[in-house]
Length: 277
Image (cartoon, one colour):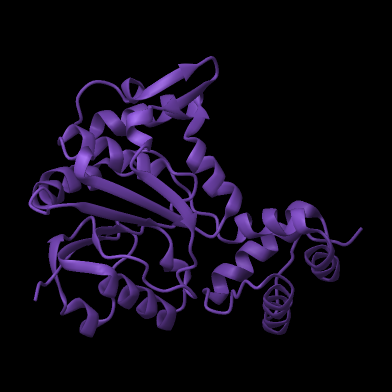
């Protein structure tokens, strides 16, 4: 068995592996942050106790391994009402402005297993805007999207999310929005009916609708600068005039030309509004 206790990926190995994945599966990780990729590849090698060559073989020969590999590389940690201050800002500064639109289309990019989409659905329902709202959740993970569509989560997770919900300042309890089923909880039908989950790759796919709000948290921080700029331009092109781009605490607009097209609504939550035309 290879010694994987101190595995580190060399630049040439990383380039080789990116090529293997691109040619065999059609996913191009060339735009991802090299340091982030190396860390995650090293972790995979240690978890699976394989050598670099064995990892390549698994990627070429085992489709189920690739699905697991994809989730590990592009993992998007998510939870309901994560960062309560962010949801407070949305509820106090964005939702009132959205009420002025005839219809509200929201794109949650990198939605993972759907918790953020359903958190937004709860916000809209509490504001009385659910009937004119539609939420699109996108990701590159097929299994994560399937989980999001089901909207069923372990009860222990919901209990962990309860404190986030309380700190967000919303009435009642988070469990009010779920049907409890022994050790699982399903999001209520009225919160799911105006949602759609589908595959979308931020680096290769284009705009697919015009949105009044786009949320993308903890996703493109893993991209190289040029691809971050590409994604931000995609969001700009996808937003309606005076629409909102919500990036969360860890992401920001680094590019002056793009930043000039937005006004800052909440600096801590990196919430911006497209300057209308």
